Length: 191
Image 1 (cartoon, rainbow, N blue to C red):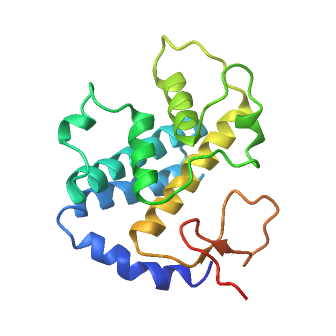
Image 2: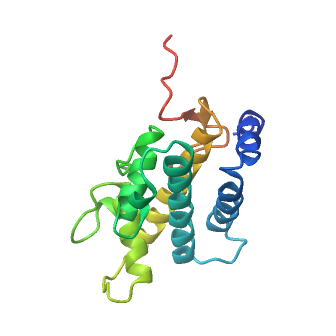
């Protein structure tokens, strides 16, 4: 949406100048760009991994360093799972974790259906990077997982930048240019 940059940049710039956020925001922006675009040359599986890394870094920065919601030990290897870290971030930012109905590849997959978006992203990422996880992943699941992880990154970044208006939801298939909706944490005005 055309106005979004103008509306969100002051919040982004504020985070950029915050010592707690500066390094994390630089890395997250880089990973977001690499995970989002085909021009980078990164394949879909790599993009899923990058998106999860970005979500976990933001979760660490927001929940542990910025808001001090939990101790550092909570994010250690013996602490919260990767899915729980993403859930904590989403909960803190009022971002829904349900898998949207439009992601039929994730919702219709064979075997154990993921409980929520965080479990879906982490499950696919784990199947990609851990050789002992022998699970064939259908192409539709890859595409949906990438779209879901990027949607979460869109929402997280918009929320952290203080945006509470409309945005172009990447999960709306057949969306035309300029078609927007309110972010999930904002109630649309009643007429």
